[in-house]
Amino acid sequence: MNEYLTLAEASELIGKSKETLRRWDREGKLSAVREPISNYRVYRRDQVETLFTDFIHFDEDTFTNHVEPHHAYTVLELFAGAGGLAVGLEKAGLKCAALNEIDKWACQTLRKNRPNWRVLEGDIKTFNFSEYHNSIDIVTGGFPCQAFSYAGKKLGLSDARGTLFYEFARVVKEVNPPICLGENVRGLLNHDHGKTLQGMISVLDEIGYNVMPIQVLKAINFRVPQKRERLILVGIRKDIDLKYEYPKPYKKIYNLKDALKKGELYDSDVPKSSGAKYPQSKKTVLDLVPQKGYWRDLPIDIQKEFMGGSFYLGGGKTGIARRIGWDEPCLTLTCSPAQKQTERCHPDETRPFTVREYARIQTFPDNWEFEGSMAQQYKQIGNAVPVNLATEVGYSIVKFLNAYYNLLKPR
Image (tube, rainbow, N blue to C red; front, side):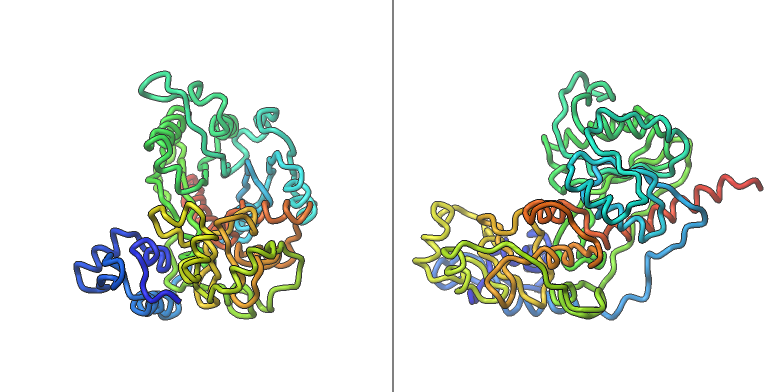
């Protein structure tokens, strides 16, 4: 296994930004050295791993975000996918009034697992949600990220027309809930140099919602054994003088063993299920990669052949030919487990994770079944919000709604 790690590789391994690592270097907390052959500044792998172990062996958390709802709060979810966010909110005590989703397989998954949920299948543009006006507590949705056309300096609802965020905002306007929540990939922060996100904030402002400071939540801080990040956008109706507080991160970080073996997260080992396979040519290469290793741990001639032109480009590319270790969180799952250059190989066997292993890493319950072909199932799981992260966000929403309805009580 490679003895040294580049700045990018060390950053990826311990889930801290490059700037944090540079600061630690200046402070002497984690010192870089000169790599003997290239003379680049690198980090000793054993020092980085020792520091990472320090992170994950905190004392057990004494606090919890858990809070009980004072009333029966209802959710309308848009772009619902296979139910990661919906199941998490349900676990937090929120009641699902209806869900909209265009993908037929995801809709079948929702119906199979929750026959009592109202699943509105089809293009959101074709649905009117006025029947829910003033009767829903929160509208949620993982709308896709699309650029806007700019008609002026301050974007209005009409300028966002044609984007799926427009549909999200239209539904919020029709329903008029006390709070709305959108989730997206971290990349939305910098999409079109930040203009897309500013446009969204401007649109919500126009329809009567104050947007809270945006946060990117790291799933590993919320009982998810996976290095996944989700951007959360929360709007509070302007007549409500209350702040929304994001869930507080837990100190304990769970790893792959917690996902797939009996322990704190699950009371049994992962159920057996079908899974994708690597082509023989890729399997032959990945057989040579040790646990927690990746393409740089291959013999140099195989590195060059496997990486092709990418071998000569900069950057760590730490997700390529990557075998996950039992004692670390998984890298972010993709929608296709065997695709090139995003390998997440099982620690002991040279294969991608199975469908049920995928679901465990996303913290779905074992009894949540996925419909469609194996490829469709992987896609549904890979696209989902991790259930445990959604639960913690759900508690923060319940806390807000408890405070809101408490304010409404006659004195």
